[in-house]
Image (cartoon, rainbow, N blue to C red; front, side, top):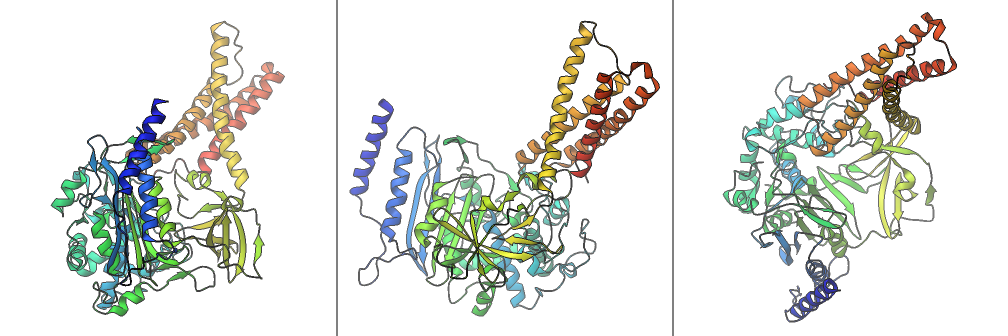
Length: 618
């Protein structure tokens, strides 16, 4: 009861404070409040954000740490708001000097750099990028087809997710961009241009191409041609933030927080440095992010010599189905809200960011938070500003419901190597996506509750159809249930092996164990099956703890261990039947059943390890 009274009192006091402060609203020259593309007013937005902030911070356990929100229209700043604390323990409030990690918004600096070089005639967006790179740069290409800069911008270079960690906690371990790229190079699993699969590697590679063409260090290039031009004095590009003393010092004042089961957990400073840094290392203030976003709708295009270059950069390069509804524009993603927007979001181990712009009204939104996942401000503010996509916008009288009941794997996953199982675990059924209808021209509209989104039909090389969304494709999974059963049985075999060993131990302890044919090798098989599954789960733990990667040493150890387990399982599968045949006197129904079961279990374990490539460490 005391907690409830305390929370109510805090909320009441906060309400009194708010009512005594005039709202920071934006008004036109005729004193009419400016409306956002959503139809909502700035005062509505401010009220919603402030009410949520005060409600959440009025109790002992807030559900968010801090957020910085800014809205502009053209050159005019309509609203800025700072909420919560970047360091709750030391009560450091979020303000205009707070710095946040921008994550993948960093990629847009690369795309602008590329377009600047294109404007100067130094790069052809449709030429094979190997012409700009050192000879023999790649080690894991599967196709001879050219990879173009447009492929990198559209994320259709064909690479799977890297299985090597792209973050390091020690700033002294950050290598040169070239060395980092060659260290984390993923396997190319799709033919260039066919499948869209969001790629940190591809974007960072584009940054290195900027280095190769310009002859300048990537960070130096961005500072000279973007940050200095826009006077963004509170932004760092280097992964260690060493290129900005202000950011270097301010970043230490920001801690990161996770929200698990509605409880906020302090996870420390989370100073994890992005080794392939053009993909996600930019860190700075809300003010600088606003300056940057405003430049993208400035008719004078300050980042280019010719304003037409900016117009070309923001024109579509990939589309939904056969329509003219864009998905991507030279690396910038389009999102359908109540209005069509472009921009980019980002996430790191320390926070999330979003930059969204309506090119028609030139209204933009920037949101920065110090939570790596889940945040009310990040999830709700875009719709306050830009509205919701209406399910009626793209529906027409010819729209047809789609119910394929297919299972899809995400293109952005691991499809080869010891983490291959990840693509199976992330598979989705089209029913999970929501109600899907074909609106024509290969455009599908998905509705779930009062929310709507778009998907595009894509024809795959094998003649089947997949689905395309922003940044990722959905690829049909063949024999999904069978593969899932194989993985499940593999785990169950290990569980049964544990019980077999326990039973054998008990029987031996009381002198009741009748040794069956090949018993020693059979027991070795049990241990091999158990160890194999333990290794399988260890890859998942390492994968999640290392932000989607397995260090080389761990990978080699696990791969060699799996090979040894397979060898032991193979020996166990063969030895028991052979021994049983030789020792005919030991033939009993129990022995026969156990021999067949153990042999089948060993064979299934080997089959699972081979199919899911759990042994493949290189």
